[in-house]
Length: 409
Image (cartoon, rainbow, N blue to C red; front, top):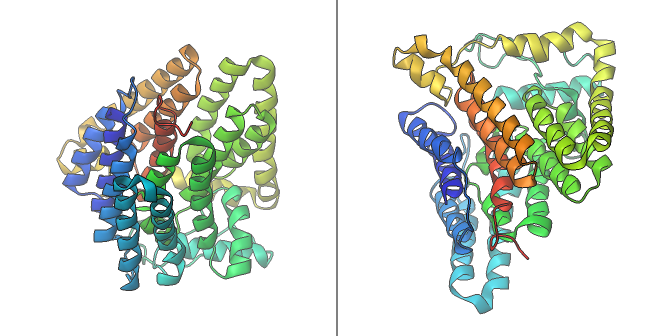
């Protein structure tokens, strides 16, 4: 039960705050983090994920939390998803129809986001679009020239701050559709499909109805891509298709900087579960794939790539709208305690390594990755809705691996 409550509190905190600092959001995160430290040990009632899916559908029905637009017809789709979910629970003989309608309503919501909000005024959207244009025009991607839409308000220069794995995935969608966010919509729905087909039907619906997905898609954050790659990595690794698992892990490592600890935890899991030979092979393939993604840009613009994706990111100034404990301590005049955060981060990372080393099964790896990243962002320098979407993706995988009767079989 504790893992599910942590998941729901995380979802509520994000939905209530859009991932920006508010005291109620900090309270929700604090309780969720404490619950996440003590994951479920027994079986989970089969009705629990369905019930929480209803909660999530109700929240979406109340407010999709988009920033720029909310068409009236969206309410009908949300209502359809909610009513179909209720029918699914109450009338077993109509479950196939109810599930179909619920899925259709929730999927339609995601599909209409790029149409409903075609031009969000956020730096990620603008910079990603310009990076794709630079790439297609043969111009340097990491050497500047980006629009400053905030007028310098946040104190850092604009640019494409992600590694080339993200760019490589988004380029075809921008070229074919004119809006790269269709790639993020596709990634989220593929993640749901993976859970639905191969892991857990109920948790798939839970992830599909996660209440801030429409907001994440509108804002064009790339974490839906990362979650899809995570699920693909797990799917291949759990079925002992280790070469493919290594490829997806390599794409993850070549996509975003904060995924390096996931690589460490995942390779340790593979080493302990599959032995030295598999570990060396997976390490070589995954690092090779990440290198192939990075190498063309390192050769063409080494200074720009290092500055934009490493140096600048490490020097990002403190933001008082960040949803984490760092902001809370600073605003309460307790900034002197901030150095203790690093002890917490090091301690939790060491603890998760120890747990995987001692019990190298899938559930321990999933929980360890979830809890470490939850700690990293709640005790780190920056944390907004996209970071916690990634945490929720890890939590979803952890929930799907909890003891039966949760699984489909």
